[in-house]
Image 1 (cartoon, rainbow, N blue to C red):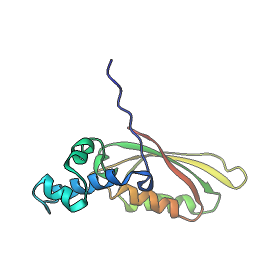
Image 2 (image 1 turned 90 degrees about the vertical axis):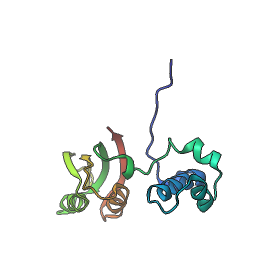
Image 3 (image 1 turned 45 degrees about the horizontal axis):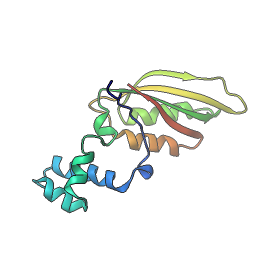
Image 4 (image 1 turned 135 degrees about the vertical axis):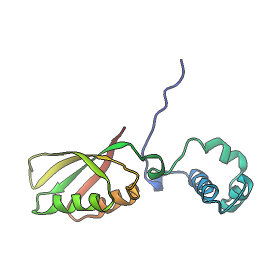
Length: 147
């Protein structure tokens, strides 16, 4: 039996440097800033064998997410207008909110999960999540599912 593919969402700081360089080499090729794989790997400082070994296994989250749905969960302080601020951030990135589930606040915090559909017009999802994490009153933002 073949091995089932498993996928992980990992923050950039946890990704080995060689994999980040593979992503950068792919970006250079796609943008046509370089014409050959050799030029791309030379520009980022990796070997061709490293590029070929990983090229099909690493993608930037936003580049590989269009048309998909992901579920984001986090805790938020029980403050008037905070949910509105969170939804405004998502709207600024033109993502489509499919579901919203919020718990009743306990000890001043509520749990929130959102199912968000990534559209062709959606901005950089990584930046959106970063902005949500930086929002005052939002805690422990995580992607828990991607479909």
